[in-house]
Structures are given as C-alpha cells and as structure tokens.
Image (cartoon, rainbow, N blue to C red; front, side, top):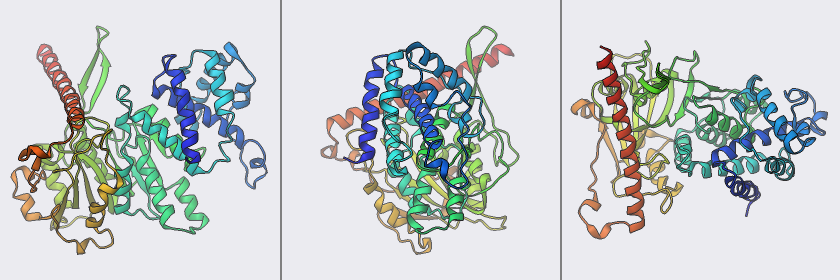
Length: 498
C-alpha cells in the first residue's frame, strides 16, 4: 500500500465516525479541506521555511491560525473554530475561495477535538510530496463523487477519460490553459501533470509560469471551487493567490484568451435562476444567454458552453469539450451552432462515449475536439473523424468501470503527432464537410456499427450490470421528468401572468 493510499484511508476511516453524527461525505471533505489548509499554513510559518530566501509569511490573520485551535478544547474550540471560518471567509485570494461561506458542520466538540489534534495535527503535510498528499486528496474526491445522494459526481470527471483527452491534446509548457467549468480541477491538474511529465528539466521561469499563471478555471458552485483550489494547492499548483474564479463563466467574456480549453460543463440542458416569489416559495426561471460573441441565443446551457469555449480560444487555440448527444442533433439554435462551428473552426474529432461513464446517471456524452481559426471565405472543417466507443461497449460505475486501457485504441487512432496521417478502422471513420452539411439539421449524431445486443440475446451482460443500468436509466428519466414539470410550471406562470 502506498503512502498516499494509507493517508487517504486514514482520513476516510474517520468519516465513518462522523457519519454517525449526521455528516455527509461532502461535509466531512469540506471540514478536512479547511483544517488541512490551516495546518499547512502553520507549517509554512515555522523553520525551515522561514529561513528560505524570499520567505513570505502565510496570510492568516493573527489569532485565527492553527495554533489558536490547538490551544482550545471542548465548547471553546467549537466557538473559536466557527469564528475562524467566518474570519477567513472575508480574506482575499486563495483564502477567500477556500473558506467562502464556510460553516462548522461538526457540532460535537469531542469529535472536532479528535479530528484536529489526533488526525490532522499528527501529519506534517508540507513535508509530504505533492504526489502523496495530492493523490490522497484525489482519492477522497473520487469517493465523495460516488455518493449519489450528494450529487457531488457532477463535479468529478472520470480520471481515465481526462488522462486520455489530455494525452491527445498535448499541452505545452508555455500554453495558457482554461477550464470554464472546472469542478474539482481534474482537467487542470492533468494538464499540469502532462506538462511536467513530458518536459523534464524545465527552467525556473517555465515552472513558475506553470504553477502560478498557466492554469485558469471558473466554477459557479462555492463548494466545488473550494475543492478545486485545495486539490491544485496540494499538488503544488497556485499559492496565496488563485486563478480559480467563483462565478458563472457564461455570464460574460473574461477579456483574456487561451491556447487551450479542456472542460466537461455541467450536465442539464437549461440554464436557470432560482428565486423566491412573493409567496415565499422557490421558483426557477429559464435564463437565455444573450452575448454578441455567440452564434445563437438560447437557454440550452450545453450549446452556450460550446459557444463560450470557442470565444475563450486564441486564433489557432485548441479545445476538447464534453457534450451530451442533444448538442449533436438538436435543431434550431443547435443547428445554427453546428453550422458555424464547422465553417469557422476546424472541428476535427468526435469521441462517442458509452453510458455508465459519468456519475450523473444515464448520460450519453461525447468529447468534441476543435481548433479556433481566423476568418476565412472557405470552411475550416475539411473532415470530422468520429471514434465510436459506445456501440457494443458496456460500462457501469461499480462492476465494470471505464479504465485507461479502454481508451488506448482511441489515443492511437487520434494520432496526435500527425492528424493528417490518420487511417480509418472499424470504430474510427472520416466524414467530409460536404457529407456533414447535407445531413438533416447538420446532425453529427452518426453511427455505423451494428449493435449486437439488439440481435443476440446470448451477448446480454450479467444480471447485476443490467440492474445497475436500469437504475441509471430510471434516475435519468426522473431528472428529465422533473425538468419537464418545471417547464410546464413556467408556462403556466406565463399564461396566468398574461
């Protein structure tokens, strides 16, 4: 067992104790984040770190640091911990993101004392390598994502998929890289690790750029942004200032452009705003994103993210974005976006993913790869290569999860070294621009393989996999029914309001 897995298991074991006190996995992970960060700031304020050239003390307000927590017990500790969280939430930079809206969820003083003094204080976190503490934290994030009750999975993209996408995108040391829906930071971390792993002996300037300036992210949910910043920090990325912004990235263009965008935007077709009406009840209102730099105006969140990603890229910048099937075939704004994408960008590759890959149940998704190009009289997309990983492949999150080996053939077919030398295979086909624009609504929802499960009952998966797929489909259907019910309610409100 590795050091990181040992620490991760040690931290996770204590979660079982706190669950009996009513804490969820997500609550526990947040409390760990607060406390580990404070412990690391305390270690940074001690020798030998204080003796290093250019030393800067951590930006923790006096009286609200780790030693102040260790000095108190029982109810006084719980009170001071709550005050510490409130104080740190008002600080700028990394502190403000990590402690934004922070609350103490451990109401039992004895448990809080044990967590601080026995579990967190027993480790020297700065002395651990970035790989050790970072991998331990990643393991906690993945376990948290598996807790379907909290919905945390929507912020966690499976790491084998992230690694394969990053490998074919090949980020470089001087690149600026963005994820406008960064969740827990998986794509940003993978880009960092790829650059470090493939560029041994980088000079100090490049290393500093990679750590402090290269990686940018936006996340609309405070709790997810907190986990992202901490995840990157434990891997040695970032510092007292952070490039992770807590904001709705669709709201406006940030005013900066990037060499590369890697992203898996949140699932769900509509952008909406929740508000309290005059009767004190919560209601949702669809938000139509209107931006002059978009090709189409729509409330479809996925189409808006696709357009947003294009605007974030520099000319010749490259993107990989996870999109659900509706982005490939939906009419109206969807058709408009696809026509512009094929004409104004080089949309060169589409990876069709099987179900059972994401923690959001029943999702049929794809990874679209495209490059932004300058204005041209002729279409930039000459051919779209589609890799079908969906037909006759069955995955489930528990009994048959997607692994890195399942993506090896796609990586080989993608041929990142020279896309011009690609060759067609059974699962990898080329479609010309003219073929695509002749299709109804310029649909990119293209299949050619025969689905053996529809013809041969002997090829059916084991009963437990079938049962898991049924549960996933029922959950997805329930989510769709809830969305339809919300739309009908909105329509009724509009009719009644005249």
